[in-house]
Image (cartoon, helix red, strand yellow):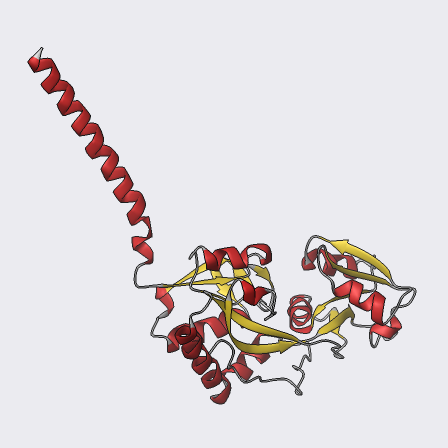
Length: 276
């Protein structure tokens, strides 16, 4: 009986040890991220954050790389993570990422949950049209036209309420679908932030163009954990350095090549001082 109890005790101990090892491995699952910086970006926005054959390209990506380098991280010390719009606050609050650059507009509502550094870009709502369409030169020309925007966006509603109350609105799940509808003549224009539209125009190989008359301002910030003022100061210093040494302008030019797009000079380049 004593021997049986000893054997049972050894089995229990072995099970406990095995469980401890499993827990330890699970806890150490993030060891591969140690010493690295985790950055959230979009994976599906041409010209801004786009995953292409295992690499990441776009203006947001270029800014993120520059900032990371100034913070002391090399390219192979960056872990890129997809940051869908609806998940950005949760990703920062849960500690899934260290910062997010994903066309993330600085708003008072968002600052209740997270903090921001930046801005690193000031976008403006604009219109994307077919290259040969000269009938649309601003939102006031959209009466009787068909306008596409992404489901859940307020961009098209802004146009309808403020500029063209007879515009016909169409929603699509993503901007790529809106661009396809524009190609095929199903809609006459697409609306969202101008730099997003410039990315779509660049991917269209000259078939689409941005009208170039922005009518709102969206201040793109670097999302960080709430209250981290020291981190915000470091990121702001990097952004301002990128602007001063010309790398910011090169990034804008490279990622909107062939579109004729120019950021609104009244607001760009911005001065990064948010979150300090």
